Image (tube, rainbow, N blue to C red):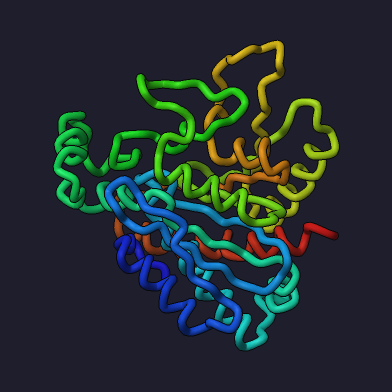
Length: 302
C-alpha cells in the first residue's frame, strides 16, 4: 500500500531480498555495487526471458517516492506471476516476463536518499559528512551522492561536460555500477523513473531515423497508457561541438548512445506539503504508472 511516508533504504533493500527469497523460482536478488558510503545497491530480476529491460529510480536523493513505487511494482509483479493473474484483465504477466525479464534497480543513490530523508548524520564517513555539511544545503533539498556529485551529470555521453574540477565521467561508484549492469545484460530498453512533472521523455539520436521512430512509438504506447505528456530530448548535432544540452551526462542518454536501445524517462509529480493529500495522490500516481513496464514489453514486438 502506498503511503505518504517514504521507506528507509534498509526497508527497500530487505523488501527486495525477501521478495527474491519468497519467489526464488523466477526472481533473483543481486547487489550490483556499493555507494561511496558503503551502502549496497540492490537489484531484483524477475522473469525468465532471454533479454531484459531496466527499471531504475533513486538517481537523486530528492526522488523520495519512486524507489518505493518500484519496490511495490516488483512485489506486485511477483505475486501476479506466481498466481498466473492477468493484471487489469489484459497483461498476462507470465507470458510477458517469460519473454523479457525486468531488472528493478529502485535505489541507485542510497546515500543521497538517506540524507534527504534523515539528515547528514546518516553518512558514516566523517570526511564526507563534514564536507556535505559545509555546503550549507538543507538536508531536505539534498540530491547528490555522499561525495557531493550529481549522478545525473556523471555518465560519459558523447557530449559530456565536466562541471566541477576533478569530476571525470563515470567517476562515482554508483555510476560505475549501473554502467557495468548495462554492459553485462542483453537488454531492450531502459525506463528511468523520477519526480518532476507528468511526462514521458524519450531520447533521440542524431542521424538515427529508425532508432528515433522506434523510441517514439514505444513512448507513445506508454503515454496512452498513462495519459502523461510526451516530450523528446534531442542529442546535439556534431556541428554544435560540445554545447551543453539537457541530456548531457545522464544515464538515459548514455544508455541510448552506448546500448543503442530505447531509453525513456517517466516523470511523476513532485510531492505536496499536505500529508493527507499526498497520500491520496501517491496512490493515484502509482496506479497511473505501475503497469508501464508491462506495457513496454507488450509493445516491443507489437
